[in-house]
Amino acid sequence: MRHSSLRVIVERAFGALKNRFRILNNKPYHPFKTQVKLVLACCILHNWIIGHGQDEVFPDEATWEPNSSSTGPGHGNETDNVAWINRRDEIANQMWNNRGTSHV
Image 1 (tube, rainbow, N blue to C red):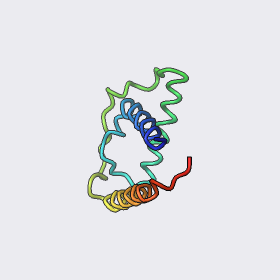
Image 2 (image 1 turned 90 degrees about the vertical axis):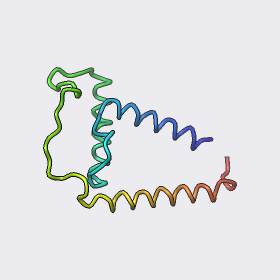
Image 3 (image 1 turned 60 degrees about the horizontal axis):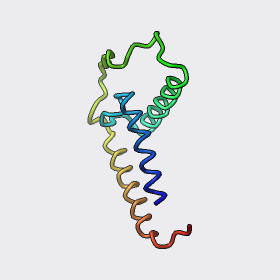
Image 4 (image 1 turned 45 degrees about the vertical axis):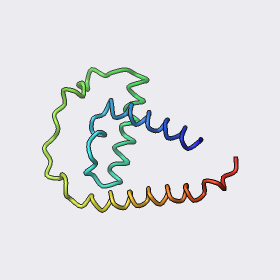
């Protein structure tokens, strides 16, 4: 029950961030450390916007144009993705195996 409640909260938080920052909607082509920094930066900016409102210096994200970049799909990030998929599965299996032994 706790896991389910936490998952709903986390999904709502990421939904709010994805609605505000479109970079989080795309398939991650960045190294994992960069992905962590992107999410953290989006959280910080989201909290700042909530506290201080929109800033006239920064244009609305809908008008932004992506920078051209030579790094894109296929630049070694598949290894990061596979590693995190395996880790996720390992955690899920561990939770499944321990489902009857948790203490409330």
